[in-house]
Length: 268
Image 1 (cartoon, rainbow, N blue to C red):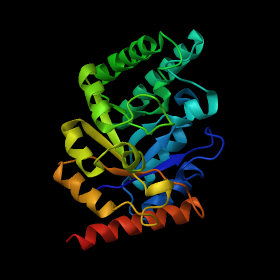
Image 2: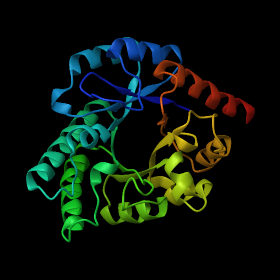
Image 3: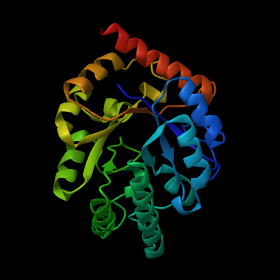
Image 4: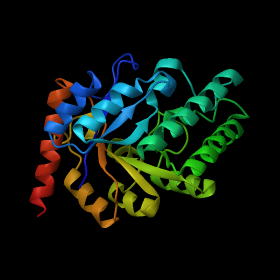
């Protein structure tokens, strides 16, 4: 199995569920834990220090598994269903820029809450679909996967289960894909372990977390059973993480990968 960990650079302010530090410091540390890749959290791809990041990737032989777009909404309030047309347009611009960035690294782009709520305006569904189709047009041209994350209520009001996300993605076609986050799936999916089979070949990313966003192994989610279900589904991508960085991000990363590798070892 390949392992990825979230990393956020200086362009992302505030508290995030990711490792911080300079690119070289952070990636070197993750490399020392034998992580294979980073999931890069991005606020604005146009402001990213590509030189420093590319240098750190080359020095550590790590790769980028995915571009996480959560900070765009968290920091700047962007969404594809904003009532303000300028906000919607900027959301599309940043997602298209994320696709172009991902293409350079062979990564995918994750769309979670950035897709926006659909219950607050009669045109919200139309705005959402129009924006997504514009992003997918560029993604299809560049061979980049755009991965939609089902999230539990109250985080979003649409695509709250894996089955809903799969139906949505099938309707889009092209390079649209779906991911599973064990925290959200545990809340929203009636049978979380069956979610991987439901997603099937459309599954392109996984976030590992325990309940209440605890470090893997600190809660009640049977992550060993999730690993078995992931393997049975023939999942070929890296496994990433999203959980509260407690007591600190470095300790959290070490504890998480140690626990998950122990589960792999126990399965033989």
